Image (cartoon, rainbow, N blue to C red; front, top):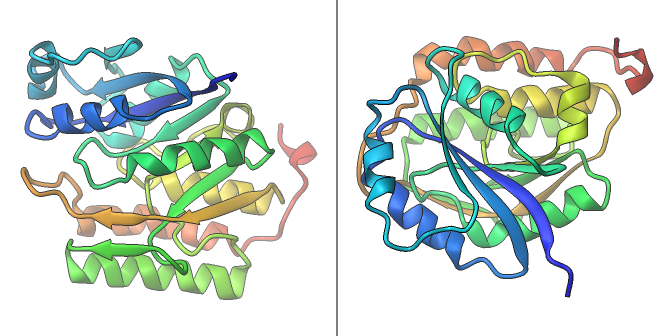
Length: 240
């Protein structure tokens, strides 16, 4: 049986309490040949020390310190640039994402989808825990974009997605701060009439540690790409 290939990217900031469990969950995935790329902002990040103590070694594990400046978007962009697969999966290191969904996400990209989304808000999906106001905003934004802009996912703001690397290289990444990078790439795929698909996922809020997500700081950045979804559509050939 030929193994499916992918690069799994984990942006981290002091995730020493969660990274080991997340890597162990990745270790259990069958039928997937993948590299795991952990990206941090500095050499002092506690995630690095935790990984050095890891007893169960993943065969293709990289730990990278990104030079672009602090922020999840910069970490994700750097990880994508250093990846070796045509399909890249972005997920959180805090254990909130279901690693069993990775196979289905990668299969969608291999079938021609440029953005495959793990959706908390479609039928069969669920979000357990987390700030209620944050959930309200992301769910409402997804519903508006799905119903009125025709975006083909109920959960454009979720960071747990698989992407065609060729697509990313074509459209580029403009985000340089937080997790708005997820909705940016959905918005670009939508505007350029490229296929987006979704599968249901169950998201569980982290059990230890504190989230680095600062809602008030990131709302304006998300809104830029929310509005972008309503712009006139173009053909991918229009990209320079």
